[in-house]
Amino acid sequence: MSIESPFPPVQIPSSSVYDYLFADIDPAVAEQVALLDSKTGTTLTYRQMIDRIDAFAGALAARGLGPGDVVGLLSPNSSAFAVAFHGILRAGATATTINALFTAKDITKQLTDSKAALLVTVSALKPQALEGALGAGLDESSVIVLDGPGAETDGHHNADDLLGPAHPAPRVSFDPADHLAVLPYSSGTTGNPKGVMLTHRNLVSNVAQIRPLQGMRSGDVVLAVLPFFHIYGMTVLLNAALHARAQLVVMPAFDLAEFLGNIADRRCTHAFIAPPVAVALAKHPLVDDYDLSSLRAIMSGAAPLDEDLGKAVTARLGCALVQGYGMSELSPVSHITPFDGGRELVGAAAPVSSCGWTVPNSVSKLVDPASGQEIGLPDSGLSETGELWFKGPNVMVGYLGNDSATRDTIDDDGFLHTGDLARVDPTGCIFIVDRLKELIKYKGYQVPPAELEAVLLGHPSIADAAVVGVVEPESGEEVPKAFVVRQPDAELDEQAVMDFVAGQVAPYKKVRQVAFIDAIPKSAAGKILRKDLRGR
Image 1: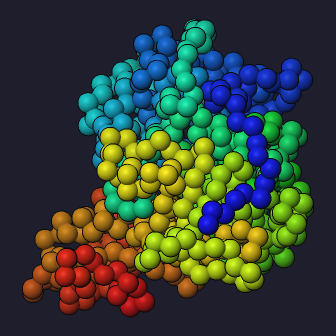
Image 2: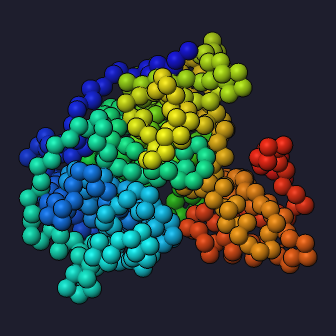
């Protein structure tokens, strides 16, 4: 039985992301502030931002880049990121956004796989960006350093070099339904990162699906701390907030005092967070030092939020806190709770522990992973547990160059199998309860166990290893824990293992706990039995 969306259908125009967001800008609204960089206080109005996007697109076209080309974007949040990102899309090129915490090796891998022709970055990330680009076969002139000194000084064009000539934006024509807008990388349900092919229609659809449910409007002030390179920040913050003509207060990284200070000083009305921030909002004494009364709503995503924690945040701040659900492959939002809890459109308030209802123009299913039978809506309480499947216009077109993984994820009927286990209530409200997939989510980032296991097995003193996600009681966060089998007579302690991994992976992928065991439990086929390790 399909679980229909309770929300009214929305109109999804056949347009590019640029046209959908900016083509109908009202002249009065164009003079409002779109982006405010929290560190410097500098602002861009909507008109200034659009002019810079057009000029950035023109600069790319002048370099011969356009439809069919991929441009890497490696940067923390900033107004310059927003301009570069939308400039890439405006030029008809495809943006592959790269995690700002990536090592040079990670950067090389993504640039190589995506066949990127250019890399756009910032000075703070230049060393790993340059090493990663050279490793992918790009030359130094193909690395743009937005805040750098410029091509005459160090050979790398900066933002002024690109925008100064004011090249006119190119005229590009493409079908939004199949033209790739972005290539974020995701591990999907398991395994190594894969390029997620999202079209202009995918991104436009998802903004159209969530906008009526978010409650954002012109004049709202939205705190933007979630990274724009992550699909959550890209769609829910950058694109949806700009479509609402809100003002984005852009933070390059999370710092609790700055987070609270920006809400208080900038009178932010909305904040989008991941569960670790909710822990701080519920428990940290610093919260009491700031006036957060301007906040109307907080949305948590990227990982499940505990109900008690959610209620504690609501009680302390006195504003609504709701959850949503999604994944890169869904552009990303498939389920959402309106900021009123669902009272107006559904006639019922979703519990804080739920991720809400299926977004408009879409359907979901719960399927018993053992029997393959669909699970219907219960008459009361919650249903049995099943894998969550989803079908809608925001579903990716597939994984880049990986037809096998695409077929494993999207079935012949167009349903994407999320790999997450869920239950449903009589109204169709979804509750995520566990994961079929082995992926670990640390602070909202995806950590593939297989990647860490491969690193561990490269240590000469390690005979075998397995990695699982475990929950730290103090923070409530899931962290990677390594189970290690030492080589005979090897001298190896927990810290040595953690240091070894830390030297080869991005910071969020670090192993946080280590246990030494005699043997890794495996099935007859050689598959690691992770369920036997959890709880040890």
